[in-house]
Length: 204
Length: 369
Image (cartoon, rainbow over all chains, first blue to last red; front, side):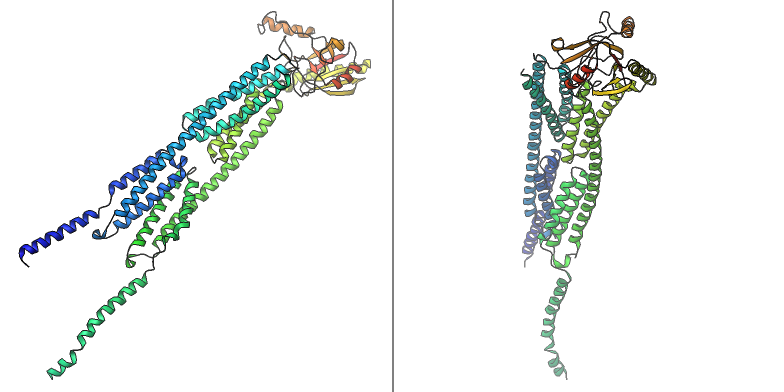
């Protein structure tokens, strides 16, 4: 073998080694992107508002990172991050989906709370109307003024709780705000029911 | 000689060449035999699912523990993947099971702690709600009674709302918020109890009790002396008793004014008077809109003295008036204190009472006895 031929073979081998080494680098950018997507999903409260999507993203990330680790453990020349890169991309998509699902879930809950508050306001307006109708009722049985005072007290007592429901919703705690709003609606339903019965009984 | 040796040694070389691969194969086989085959990845499916359930259960109450289990789950996946990918002789027997076991043990401990805490919170919540329920029931029983105004009725409704909300939050697993609402309900009922206690505070005043007992004794003595019926109204007990010849003849449940536990001072205060009076008119038919009525001589001299003193002290606007038309009348029986200051009985009881008394019958109204 001539010296120039030996030189050519050495260069080709060196290039092959360099090439193979390049192929064996961990896909750090994809790892970072996946982790960032997962953090964004966590920040969007995916564990609370989209638990299934969040679990899917966690699982996909775990498997992808396991594959990265498997390749890291291999001899440099035999490493291949092709599968890992693909799995990281899948995990990233799952994390983005979890974030989107969380945003949508939270939004849906916020809308439900806003609807509840609107229902409470409507019920309070209805209660005020009933109180006004009862107050001007011609038929006034004994103790009617006192009954009316109690009814008004009930309505005012429940009205005073609406501020807390709104404050809790404003703070973004939609789960608690939803429970509070439903509790308030139940209370108002009972009070309004009593007033409607009284109004029907008195025919006013 | 040299030739013979050469002839004898010649066949040995190919035998040695054969032995080398055989030995190598034996070494590889031995090495392979030392390490078990990696378990099927599906082996861990059950453990993986259990850990996922644990994470989900832990997350709302102990997010740090949930994150730790998630980290250990990821580590177990990593070890398992590595063990499945490396050559047999690089595999460490038991490494993957150990990783899964660590995750499971951590999850189990965290779950046990979380469940204990949840059980404690549930017990505390149940206790608070039971106390709040009892307080609300007591407060609701007083609604309509003298001493409870509309504001107090509203506070009772608010307490009920907090209990409902606490139950909803507790069912949803949000024990911290549930406890806060239960405590708010309990605070409201405690406040209602306190205000109720204050409204009936004067009924345990020894000097007032002595005065009322003296008035009642004098009234009973009058009935014994004259042989005629007398009426004693115990406001706190909502009880009207008829005595005749010093002995109890009849007892009726009574209802008071909307503010009936207070002593009447002025017109429109819905309070029921306290003192010694007489029946001045017996009303029936069209004379009363309350079935039957016994008008009494409120305000008496003592009432007018109190009224003038309060007017002079600027406690009530001048010209308000001490009020009048205080009666014992029918249309009662609702279980509420609803009158403008009168004492109400059921119509049936009023029939009986009306037949027993006459104009001039002594009526003594006391706070309690």
